[in-house]
Image 1 (cartoon, rainbow, N blue to C red):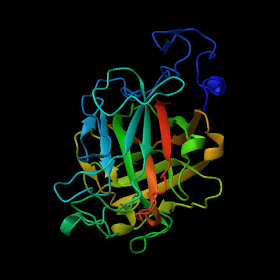
Image 2 (cartoon, rainbow, N blue to C red):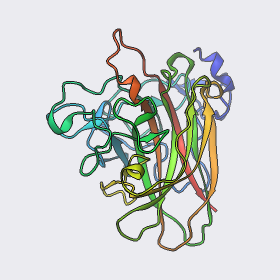
Image 3 (cartoon, one colour):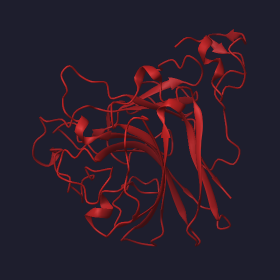
Image 4 (cartoon, rainbow, N blue to C red):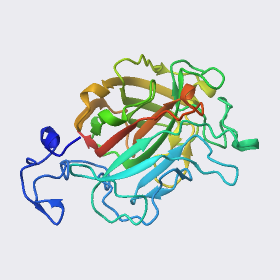
Length: 328
């Protein structure tokens, strides 16, 4: 994709014709630097990191201040790191790859991609073939089109990895608008049935067991049929397999959804996101005080694609910029 073709990116603050200074756009060509009212901390990941996650990370570890990592596939036998396929790109055309270490505090695009593998050399409690896996490890099912999911590999089940952040909800807030700027580049489209997007969760339980409300935006190929379960799931494995992850306290704790209420899922097409485009959704909050809410940007890899394809089949990727939560 040429620089010239990027002029139509609808979140650029200017045109490609502006002068560049020191290799950077001269003031008006970066992606939108901020969103008024955004409750997220460092939504542009504008924090320096020496060793950010690239292919794996421990679940619940915070990077870029308050962004926590979560994955579901153990990557080897040596420890409990999970997959966290991530790239970091400059926030201006042509979205230069910034590398995987010694990142400075410039705003960044987050690129998430899959593995194409369930790491078949793993042994013991690191084997990624048990769809009923739960406490104390991460669930193997991130979401599914049925509850519970079938045995691994289930082509109607997905493994997720993501960055997430929890925030306090103002006592006066009754609604929240959430979303992000998303791009699915034409030269790196999802493998069939892979997907990605952004979701929020609200746990209304004051203490365990959790009672979690989910709303999501899922980006997929227009030719793929993906119908993730909605509605209130029965407690136990049916709920735990749907959208469990990291807790909303930003303290490294994991979240196993004891009861999951999937209120809504909106679907977007990759064909509408060849360039960065804002996706957003407004939902009514659960009432109460001292509330918290979490948001995550994620890659969803279909379990049928964890197949060690030879030659390797590209997993595709999804690019995020400026995720947001705006309370009303």
